[in-house]
Length: 309
Ligand code: NAD
Ligand code: UGA
Image (cartoon, rainbow, N blue to C red; front, side):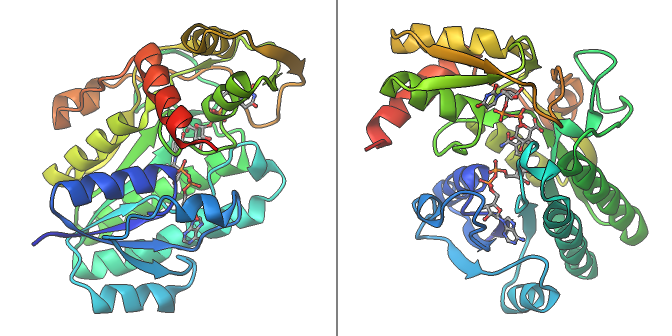
């Protein structure tokens, strides 16, 4: 029986991954500290009861060691992190602690036991990009503390992989959305606002571009990377570019309602455009994203309608 550890397993992407792993018949162990970035109740709903939960903090090495000593672990999906780009500008220390110190603790334990690791990094490590689609070799120029913390965590991944010779992959996700989507992110906020007749706030002129990626495509990519024991860096996006203004139009069309849009100042830490070159993940691990922005919003909206009060 294969045992996977998912850190951040009560979070948005982590909980979708845990559900899929359990569906495929794996044993799943999760670690989550139920960080208060968004409410505990919200995350409790995410937790699959078939997963074995350790409630605790990845910055606590002794706690982590107990998890590794008590379980035979075959692979670690490391998703636990403070994840808000704009929020990190206010609390850089918290972001570095969770994202860098926590990752170092995990990598040490995995390197000693030669346990495969797949780490959740971010498209934000590239910063303001010189070209799109952006491949993995593009220079890294983070413009938020969050993005810099992810770049440091990637460097730790590379260091441990080379120093101790075991499989470590760091995958760069592109603005993920879908069921149980984080309530601070654009698609979750805008969908809720349009359906409830509340205003939408667009930061800047709305012409910023994002490669929005449906969560099941990310889960597909993560499981493929893990199963192959792939090493190194992989972009996981859709390879499409959608402006925030167009995103609102798609949500309006699918909901068949008009949005009430308010434009406010651009936020510090926000990059102007992201769009992944996914050739490497396609060729080396068979990653094949299935959702366009329209089909993804449709699916997300029907989940939201069924699951909102
Ligand atoms: P999320 O906030 O829903 O999930 C993160 C989980 O980690 C939460 O449940 C939180 O309680 C937990 N956590 C935070 N700090 C912890 C700590 N110190 N110890 C233990 N648990 C801790 O966010 P998400 O959107 O699901 O993101 C998951 C991962 O993917 C993160 O690493 C994030 O940086 C990365 N990522 C997300 C996106 C996206 O668009 N959502 C894009 C790129 C990368
Ligand atoms: C997302 C995730 O939140 C990060 O965890 C992740 O690392 C990053 O993607 C990534 O790709 O690596 P972001 O692209 O900022 O970050 O995602 P959203 O919060 O959905 O924002 C998308 C765009 O909509 C941004 O330009 C943002 O400024 C804009 N937005 C968001 C608004 O105009 N209004 C809002 O209320 C929210």
